[in-house]
Length: 367
Ligand SMILES: Cc1ncc(C[n+]2csc(CCOP(=O)(O)OP(=O)(O)O)c2C)c(N)n1
Ligand SMILES: [Mg+2]
Image 1 (cartoon, rainbow, N blue to C red):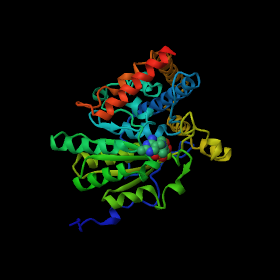
Image 2 (image 1 turned 90 degrees about the vertical axis):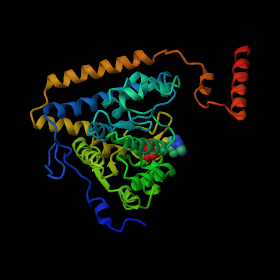
Image 3 (image 1 turned 30 degrees about the horizontal axis):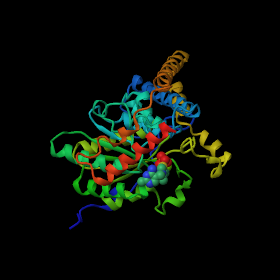
C-alpha cells in the first residue's frame, strides 16, 4: 500500500522559484537557502562559468571549421550547471546529457577529451571513475536510469554517495526518467533529478511539451519533492541543490529540481532556431545572462576587479587553446571499433552488421 503518511503539500513546489540574485547583482538573503561559500568560492563560481562559455564558443568554432561533426551549446545555462555541480561532494557522481560542459568543467574533466564525442573519434576521452562524471548521453533521459541504479547500488554497498542526473524539459516526457523516478521514489534512493528547463526541446516549446502547471509539479506523482529555482542565478541553483544533496545524503531520499533557464544558442550546430523563435525573444533572454549577473554581484561586494577579470580571461583562453590543440586534426579512429565492447557473445545479427560495414569500408577504399 502507498504511504498514506506523505502529505502531498510537502512535495509541491513553492509558488515562486528560489531566486537570490537580481540581474543587476542585488542579493536577497533567504534563511531557507543560505550560501555557505567564502569569497574564494564565490569567485570560483564566476570563473567556472566564464571558462565554460569560452570553451563552449571554441567548440562552436571548431564545428564551423569541420573539426567537430556537431556540437550542443550550453550558452545561457552556465549558472544552472555550475551552481548545481558545485553543490555536490567530490565523491558524488554526475550522469549528464550531451549539453553538460559546465558541469564537466566543475569536475575538472579534460575539455578536449569530452569533445571527442562530438568529433566522433571516441565516446569521450575522460576517465569517468576519476572524475565521477559518466559519459555524456545522447539518447534522451537514459542517464536518469543509470543515476538511479548507481545510487541504489551505492546504498546497498553502504557507500554514502549521492548521484545527480541532468536532463531537459523534453526529457521529462520520456519513459526512462519516468521509470527512474518511480524507482527512486519507492527505494528512497540518494539521487537528484536536475532538470534544466531551457524552454525548448529542439523546436518544441514548453507549452507543447506538457500541460502540467510546472515541470516540478510532476515530481509529486513519484513521491518526490518538486523544487524550482531561477536557473540563471548561480547562487539560487547552488543553494537549492545543496539542500537536495543534504536530504539525499541523510537518507531522506531523492529530489526533483527544475531550474528555469534559457538556451541562448541553437539546439545544436545543425539547428536553425530562427525558424521557431524571434530576435525579440533572444534579446529579452540576453538581459538575464547568468554570467553578467554574477559579475554584478561580485562587483557590489568588492570581489571583482580588473585583475580578476584578466586572470579569468587568460585562463579561459588557455583552456580554449588547449581544446583546439587537442581536437584540431586529431586522427579518426577505426570505424570497426564501433563493434568492440558491445557483447561478450556477439549475436548473429550484430556480426552481420559488422561484416556489412567492413565490406562498405573495403569498397570505399577500392573505389
Ligand atoms: C530517445 C531519443 N529520442 C529523440 C532524440 C532526438 N533528440 C535529440 S535532442 C532532443 C530534444 C531534447 O530536449 P530537452 O530534453 O529539452 O533537452 P535540451 O536539448 O533542450 O537540453 C531530441 C528529441 C534523442 N536524442 N533520443
Ligand atoms: Mg530543453
